[in-house]
Image 1 (cartoon, rainbow, N blue to C red):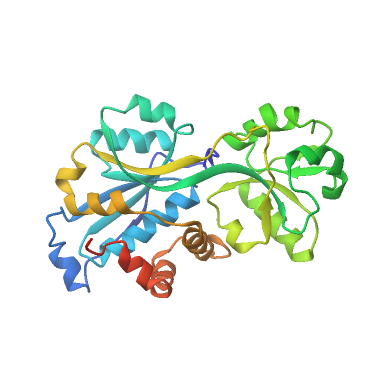
Image 2: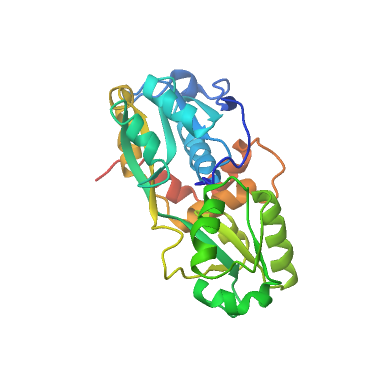
Length: 300
């Protein structure tokens, strides 16, 4: 995210995440009967959990409708480049107007926006929900409550840069120990502290499954140091709407609220020591079937 937070994991330019097999599903063998091409390639920003979640959700939805979907993990730049050349048909995790502005401008005439699925993406500083603090402008005077520590993520992340460049100096937090290592390390500390009933202060972002897994709240940012809320959109190749007219309509209408997204992410990433997400997502779909069915229902 801004994970953007920039490279949450170092990856090679591309590594295949999942291929939907057609074998036992006769519908899949026949392909979609709605005017769309059967084969769909999706670029997924490596380490961006919200993009992984929605991409795997749609992979499972489309596999059952006869599409042959390939999800490929790569860094942000190769995904944008791949969409512009048609090597990828689409990607579902484009943050605007700030995070991916450079890439969107660079490839603007070679890619097309297909739809926006959330408008509440933002960087945050979060604490346990019962902490006696509501705003960042209180933090300098209550630093002892958190052991004088801010638990961050990767040193090179965009969120870390925002903390160092704007949040810490503008709120007078220079005397606090800003600890950076990795997102998994931050989440481990968050889980341990909330489980023990201890106060903890972490850098985070929305959307993230931690909001479903742990009893936490965001601190208000009256000075706007973490930036405005962004929207997350799906982008496709220039021929996408011709190649996938039905899917283009689904992407245009696709919206996911925080409750469903956080729940899906929590199921996929919180304690699941696997990247074989298909059975996890299938189970989640079965528990949210009515909502999932509505994503591809014919409009009245």
